[in-house]
Image (cartoon, rainbow, N blue to C red; front, side):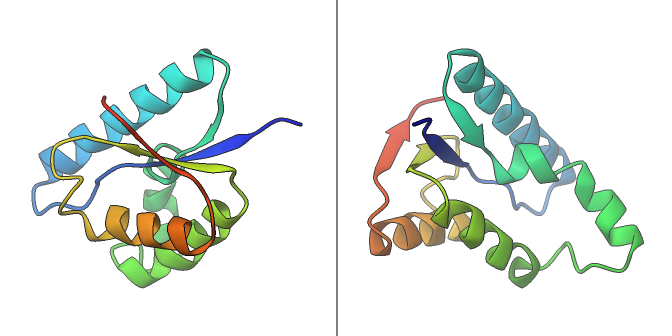
Length: 114
């Protein structure tokens, strides 16, 4: 059976430049891991571009609550949580919540450097 890993990395920041950098890093990391043969879901890599379209439909894409339900659903379907240790990962509310959710759900947590 194929295993699926959820990729957690920091995203939210006051600076649009930093958010864009973090999105690029998340996409690069997810692509490298996938190219190595591991199936992955990265909420940033898979949703960063789509958020503009969602906003056009009135979705509150700049709120944590909008993404939280979807991210927890996706994480609950994964076999592992891979936390990418990008700058700010320890302070990221989203990453810390994903770690807590995974631990509470019995999903193994793996820390990886970028």
